[in-house]
Amino acid sequence: MANKIVVVFVHGWSVTNTDTYGGLPARLSAEARALGIDIQLEEIYLGRYISFHDEVRVSDISRAFSTAVEDQLSDILKAGNRFICITHSTGGPVIRDWWHRYYQTDPKNGICPMSHLIMLAPANFGSTLAQLGKSRISRIKSWFAGVEPGQGVLDWLELGSSEAWDLNVDWINSSDASQVDPDRVFLFVLTGQSIDRTLYDNLNSYTGELGSDGIVRVAAANLNSTYIKLEQETPKPGKKGVFIANELKVKTIKQAPNTAMRIISGKSHSGKDMGIIRSVKETLNDPKSKETVDAVLACIQVQTNDQYMALSGRFMSETETVQKNELIEVETHLLKSDTYFIHDRFSMVIFRVQDDKGHPVTDYDLILTAGPDADPNHLPVGFFMDRQRNHVNPEVITYYFNRDIMKGTKAAKIKNGMTLREGTTGAEMLGFQLKARPNTGFVHYLPCEIKASQEMLETAIHGNSTTLIDICLRRVVRKNVFRLDKLTSPVKPDFKNTKPGDEIVE
Image (tube, rainbow, N blue to C red; front, side, top):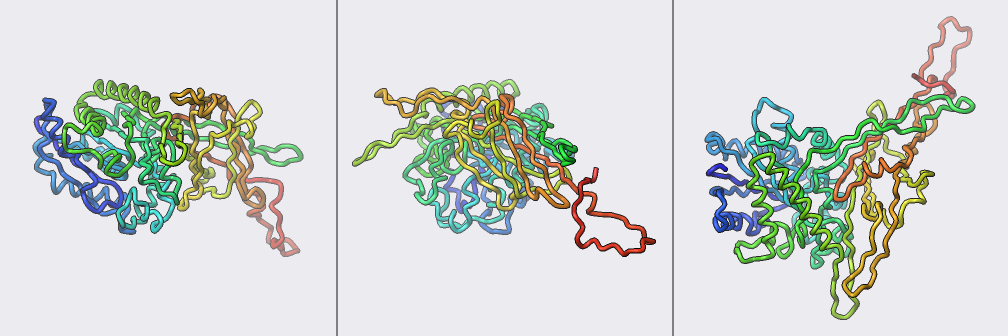
């Protein structure tokens, strides 16, 4: 362990002061000394960046962060030290973009000066709230303090944004050995799944969404994700010469490198009482802060791959315990019956539909199927939670599933034996049907599907996780789009009323 550890804190989106860090910086220093851990948090930099101007994008912030590191940490880095970065919310994607932009894709820059990236409640795959619009979202008191968010960062945070898609696909396609390594960066995700009911916005149900911390879904924070590419088969003549291309075939399945991920019990995204970072108190005798602080300290102490894998396994086990203990939430009321919430595990699936020429396909029906007959009616009741289309990239649509209902659940009971929900039977299979438009004319698309199967269900739906599914359709071009007529023809051709015809371009 190095004698000197530099910790850089990077806040979230539309923060205007460093109060958002709560007592965590001072608490980390105090805990390290009290426990006799061989680390010294001698220098803590409270990062601040501007995100509430429309022209500022995530890539701009990461470029500015690179300059800030060079300008303000140069002496420390020249002495052979690397820094640990602790982020909150949008700070996670900002630093991931910086790391990817300057070190993962540019080996000539050498070893990244950041050794650990500890992300608290990171919006790695975005947030459902980002689509609500600037003026509306700025009124949500659980996230903002009278600050209207900047559109540039807001666009990145919208589910399925092209910037987030590219960053996450590159991450999924990377390998464990090249990314999570002592000479690279140790990554950690710490997030909550609790809702601070005192901050719930009655006009926006997303602030009370199960499987989230009120702002970011657990599945959107977790980097343990999956990429699937499906390609439509080549069109071929069917009955009466009509071309068909019914089958979607699996081209690629890729799992992301293992990332240590821990759900912290009783924590929401923000707020001084339950916020995963802001609620941390400076004093050592604050029990509500202990779980968060202990997890951060455990991350800081990792120095080898073996230690990383061991902590990752421990976090997985602790997360299972937290989710078991938090399965049923009871909200008590003074003059009416208690309210119960069942905290299942959820899965997010983001679909992007393009054709084989790279054109976005923005008008389509995507239908989920299940059972041996690939029937939408065989899907379990209550599995579907939300759907959101990206407004900048309408070829991208995000589905939010109750993973436990999708796979089947046991009965949910409270202490007095009352059953809140009977046991459910899962889907057992999953498939997709796609009907894109235009479906006639000179250039069009043909309907296709991937039949429901257990393999697709197991591959695409993971608890607390996101799956990116690329669907590539065949762009069907009719031969009559372009014809050559002989100049010697006695009749001048009139092609104003030309029909698409029956033949297609190979």
